[in-house]
Length: 201
Length: 307
Image 1: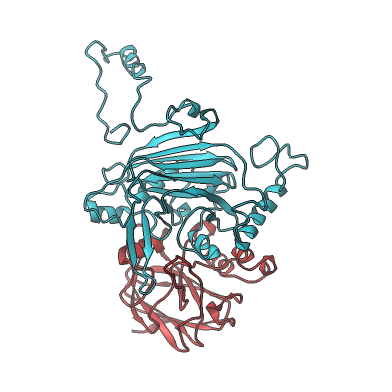
Image 2 (image 1 turned 90 degrees about the vertical axis):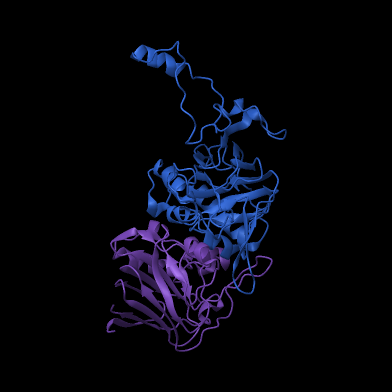
């Protein structure tokens, strides 16, 4: 396997690229507990995209780990997690936005950078807009759900150098926001760089 | 089966020939006034089965939706939408959009994250991607709902039941929502994950496994209040995790009447600091669109109640 892309994604920055069918995507948490917000689209028809509900329903669980099949909203398998050093990743919390930050933390956070800003700016290069944003995956983010239904973003269980690797079943456009959030523990209150490697089929 | 897609054709009586346009017209007009189990009542104020606490004269929407059916409606801010699981086996999948600007829509991730709660109940809010409240749950006698599993895909229903298209006997929720959305000029890009009422799912706190809790078992009612002008899409079909090998879904009654959005400081805007701020985002937006005397208000009421 040869690396088609091997990029350091700066703290707070977006990244995008196409992972070819049969190729791999590896995301490496370089400094530990860095949430990486991620969306997937069919490269040749971006109206079909990763669906959290479809993925959860077929696997019967809210967490992603080795063996998890990421499905599109039509049920089609897009990618499978083939290696994972962490054990579980979030599918419920979605992306932070300037607007949701006002509700979660107060209107003083309105000016802060957020994942939706990254998704919109980076997605625009591929013809994607607001209509194309749906519930995303948060690699390395820890969101437990208690028996009462109380859920929250809590201290991470990742560590420096841990990574997750996916095998693509289709040509998949990948949109990433290296999360800039500083108001909750998803980045250990200190956003850091991550590494993204795309492997050839 | 009422107006189910597989209702039997209505054949002309022997006395009515349909060889000519006049005969065909007479046959068509002869059907007027037919009442079936599943249909909308127009005007809604003519609905004969309004519950005692609802003044029929105030109804703006009265409809019975068959299992496997769907409906959709634009409603003003302040409208109460009452969903009634008539036999204890309905499953109402909903999508909410801000009417006239559908790029602002239900965001289930923000809905649970911002309220720190994965399960729905009275007082919970449905939040848009703009940090605003689309609708609030003002009452709930079921407690069996879900915002995690969405509506099933065609592929999943084909896998489970052998068919999943919108007009098949086991329609996938997403197929029905796609058709409903299309009638408002919306397409697949516009469909985010949906919510569902009357069939419950819980998460195992340790493993994260999804556990089916199903129906409350008896007829139950959920009432929503539109906090902004809304486009509401409703698909009534089996939940994706419904364990029965045969597709099944009961009847749903939808009633709505006009009213006013939640006032600042009153429940459920007062229920939590997050609710308070989400409603503040609503008020800021609504007031900015209103004229000073309230004569052109966004709430479609006589006077805009500036919060």
